[in-house]
Amino acid sequence: MQKKIISMALSAALLLSGSAYADWISGNSASLTIPSGDSSIMMDLADTPILVTLKEQTPGKADVTFEPGTDAPFTLKDIPVQLFKGKAKTSPDSLNISIVPIINSGNGRTFYLTETGDANGCVLVSYHNGTFTKAFEASSVPGNWKDANIAITAKKLVLNLIDSKGAVTEYQLAYDKKSNTFYPVPMHRFGLTA
Image (cartoon, rainbow, N blue to C red; front, side):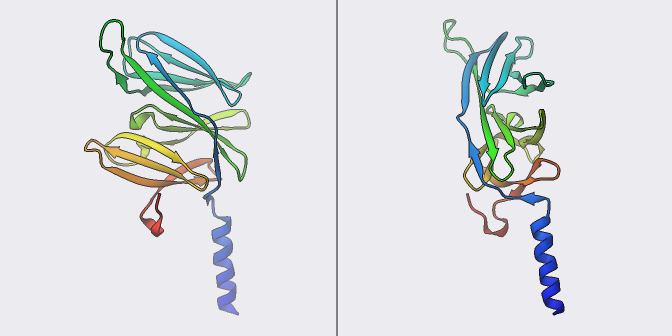
């Protein structure tokens, strides 16, 4: 009887813990290439206006502002972006940035994945109750990462971190319901594979 009670208590603790692996639905990616220098582009993604701003005085950096209607905007300030050198004066330097809406089907929460070709530009932004907050930054994972991306599958979010030699380290992103943030779990732990 005592073993049964302990077993039930452990099961309940696992079920009620703050972390979860949920089902994920991704929307269409908004990828855009824009010339470097002073420029701004407004796009609408999943009914959320998003403004991407480049300033000539901060080359290789961009501001991404999420503007939820009448609520206060949220800005990822000076995130690094990968610059692509133009071939001639007729082909100026440019950058590519990708923003993908992601929905947690378990609780309906919306997230936006921003990827820029730089590990510091791989950010998950949460939108809940009219407020945007940072939910995860690839740069928070210890290491010297050159690039990062997040693969979205139906059952998991897989973080790929790339070092300067091109070696890839994979993590599954676990969602913490209480803090509305993600934390990385090494893929080799518990036999997880991509």
